Image: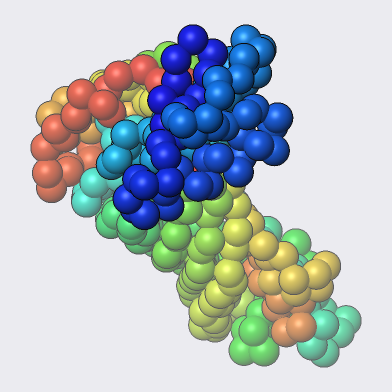
Length: 368
């Protein structure tokens, strides 16, 4: 095929069959488009320029002619779906640090404390429900006395914040004399008439085991307040020995002995408040009690003191009271009370070594 000045020329029939076969498809396309295709031996036909341009476009679109062998079309990358930005979850609020009770000057270490109580004692004897020696009475007011009571307290730490206390006091025997206010029957053994002299020996002991549980605490600067619940078991023992100098009809005096031991055992509950003012000074107050009804046993006690600590020793001074009443379901009922100031010297087994965190002021907060 030859293209010259708007004409297309095809070789003559004598061209080899291979050339004829190669140009045969193109000749058919040109005839469909209205472009004359003639052989070289035929007459030249004039070609319209517009048709020549269209012919060039057709030739460019034929595969194998417009594209070089081996060339490949690069596909466009597929559109990526939009990625949704996820906002990070809000960080959880950091809880405030847990409040820890101070270990500075709390009195919790293992300790031994002797005490000296300058007390005043009032003990009375009353008629019980089982008293049957009428018309005599069983009521007798024992004169007050001022015993010098000695005792001791042992403290043992329990856990990180609580404490177990063992305390014991024993009053020396108090000997007093009284005149019978009327006809008396004392313990079904001794009978006193009006005006008879009665010699009385009385002794009171108190044993207590207490579990002091730290229930709440709060701080103000360098000071700390602690509220404790007290779970206790107490025993009060009262010994009364009497000698009645009974006057006989022949004006002689016959001594009659009478006496009884009273034991009151009760669980008691209470509340304690402690305030550590500094590394050297603190004060505390405790009160507890229990009653089983108007005609049954009852008991109550309390203690208020201030303590100054120097190394392993702590000087304690304060006041305390003790009240007790026996059950009325007996022949005689004993009741009484003791109160007064006391002093003590507490010795700690280990010397206090406060940490920096314990001595630093912290904000207020309850225990957990």
